[in-house]
Image 1 (tube, chains in turn blue, red, cyan, green):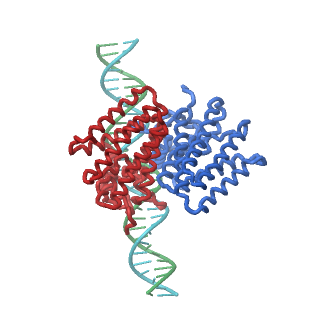
Image 2 (cartoon, chains in turn green, blue, yellow, orange):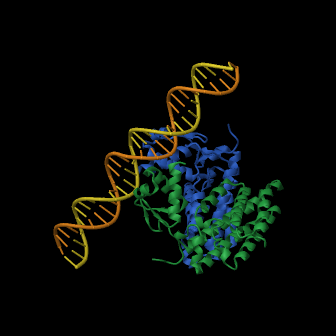
Image 3 (cartoon, chains in turn blue, cyan, orange, brown):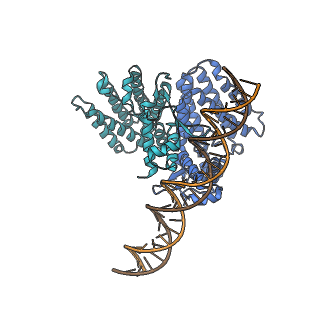
Length: 241
Length: 241
DNA sequence: CCGTTCTCGTCTGTATACAGTTCGCACGCA
DNA sequence: TGCGTGCGAACTGTATACAGACGAGAACGG
């Protein structure tokens, strides 16, 4: 593994775990010690993380860890919804042979099994992994490199990813209900694409993303729920300090 | 001016002007001579241009100049349409005091004057500049930093910018017609936002972007039209070489 | 006592040296 | 003649040295 990649992963973890708090100035020299690499790879990692949106460049040089408020997270989720809606619409419009949907159909069937009543205790992580697969397959069906770039960029913020706010749901009573609704949307999106109903697919995918927003609202009233979310350390739901 | 910024601008020009052709390997050492800076700023510029999408990183290290085919440009335009549509919808939904639209109204009125029958010969560049202003104001009204980031990223590809395919229009007979239609869409988008008609605003803004696609199709049959487009050197409409 | 200015330390921006790797070319062998 | 191998050049990745800029803090003056 290269030093640059190593530095990038370690630094991202430092930020996501909260070792570097939002608003903190991030200097290169201290990172040289903490990451065990020289300034060059550190700089590279800083540039990439600024690009990802986790860091903000100061006009005078250097970086600070970015903080994210409620509105910003809502906007990021809405943006993801718009982009995934577009993916669903394009998938409908550009569908060629129906066998192109085989992988997605299989994925939905596997999700059915996980969400079903006989799901084991470890079903949750299986759901998250299959959910991500569903969203990636959907993106592939859109056959648009521009859209791929945009969605990758938009979901580089950890709490904007498709599975971000499926936290601790196993703890909540409404947890299973949420999963059932989400999975029904998966199924319906697939159906819409099969029927080449572009507008319907788009609307469904948008609404699907808004489930994340609902979960965010839940977390707003119970901050402890947030701890399961990647990058929770960056989130400032209420104006603190 | 810093060396890094200097290197970035010069290198971008080299690519956009076609001094570096699509598919060309871009090495650091030759650029040190051509740009007159050391390897460090050159590397920084390379990373940024990869991020912009003009360069592609090779697995073995180094970069090549990216080439863009017809489909990719169409997708980039469609993506811009989706994002600007979202901006228009959010602007409608989040409109506060009506005075927030003052700047946009003024911009539309100025565009009216430029498009009108008594437009001078230099009206074209004035149109381009006002057009960009319109699109930026629209983005601002959406009040979404996530959307701002996404649209900035999407339009970093030169031919995906709002004014990209308003080339050499003064030469074409249908030139004025195109401008009239585009300006009518500007006016109608503003009206929709004023009335808080989100869906209408979204649809209009999407269709507005598709004007660029129509112009692209025009350029397909008359390659000489492309020469006025920034980044034309990157475009491979037909499979060449 | 407060404001201003000077100074010192720290940081970033830049250049460059060094090492490991990969790619291409040519030579040799089958 | 074709293929494999080995050598060499060039390039990237990395580390580090140096210079200029910015900011914090102290000292001086009002």
